[in-house]
Image 1 (cartoon, one colour):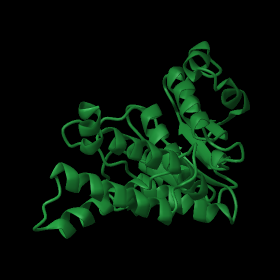
Image 2 (spheres, rainbow, N blue to C red):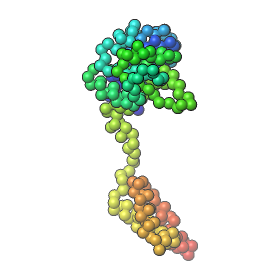
Image 3 (cartoon, helix red, strand yellow):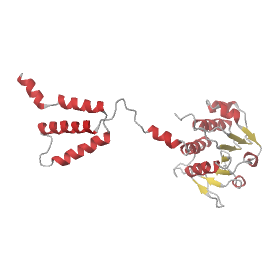
Image 4 (tube, rainbow, N blue to C red):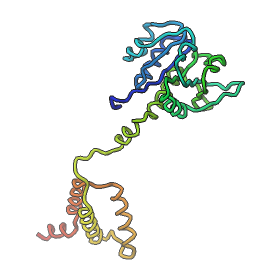
Length: 254
């Protein structure tokens, strides 16, 4: 789960959306990634029960959504606007991918409101719409099937915005931390472990007397990568003791 402090003050603008369900699905995509500012430009149908149903819990994003008559109105206060497009254009536009889009929007957000704009489902943004954007954003996809629906495209961009959040690096680092139920073994405990292991390998004949150092070094590398804790060292040494051939011989003679 994301930390509660993660909020993304970046506007998502949907232009002339034809199906209200796509508005709801886009709201859901936004909320899962920490975005909440949705602006709708001349939607065909909104408010709508279909939008609410597809929002699936992101009703608050829909409730706060504002409707504008034109893209010019929707982005009037923005200092940087990036338009999304799935198709190439006859005119050359500065084009970036979704990851670069996220980095650029976060960088510009310090100066004022910023927005990412998505066009109608079937036709996308017109050149007139793009003329009001600073850059064009394209999501690379498989050449065999490059079709993303509106909510999918919104989800991809919102995910990249989340990953580019200034606080997210600390959060991501925490995900990689292993929660341990015992302290890490000390260098002294690890050395005693290796002495015990080497002794067992010698008595079982596993250690090649002609090349003992190579095997011992490889084993040390294995266990160094594992970063054994004290409980794990005790478990392994208990296993060594149970597998001790001299101990088995003593039991057989008794």
